[in-house]
Image 1: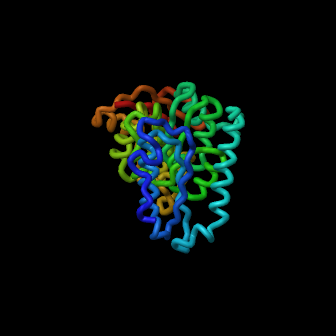
Image 2 (image 1 turned 180 degrees about the vertical axis):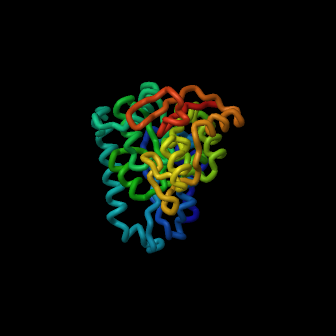
Image 3 (image 1 turned 90 degrees about the vertical axis):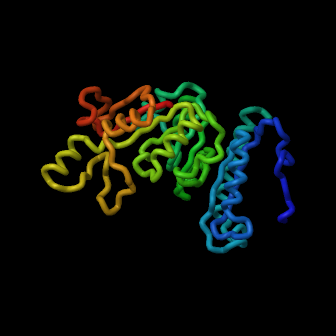
Length: 93
Length: 197
């Protein structure tokens, strides 16, 4: 996974505006994917004027947290997706 | 959505910003203010908030928010990314005040700063006659449970702006009953300044 690299325009080509809303979730005790790295991603996306929401969920389950903190994840993703669907419907796309 | 029983400071801030402004609220809490600004001024809003439960409430309202403290939350935003950066009732809880105001005026063209006036006459009376740290409507906490780190008056903030070469573009003084104009440093419970570099 450490070789997974979307930097330098691989994910978002240079010169393109991002019109996709992005939700980034991290878990406090996950040392494999630490929150500071998620924050770095958010900062990079900010530099490109992306609309990003970020939340660090409190958890003591380490890297397994994403399998166990289901309620918090579910609430964030559900409300985020509801907004995206609502906006898509309003814009007719 | 909030309609009639809107707080006076929210209405004043909505009156300050232009239609469709890009707005960042530092310490946005449950997102009531930015949801209101999005609704009545069609503002493009974002928030920064430290409290996790408040972040869930913001996302529930469909708001874009960043989970962070105010002191480090502005890193990564390009210069002039926002028309307004709001610090409403959060400046007094900020550790690095000078840095946060400078960063707010880097990422935003103007800053809207609202805070409780520590020199309000009730606070003065309580300190002078009762010899106790003030507990008032706008400063509702006791010394042992207050989140406030800074205790400033309107005059203090004006002096700060002068020393830091910040221009005060507008000021609104709020009492218990509404907006006031006379002797604000004595009678204003809260104040909202609009500042720029």
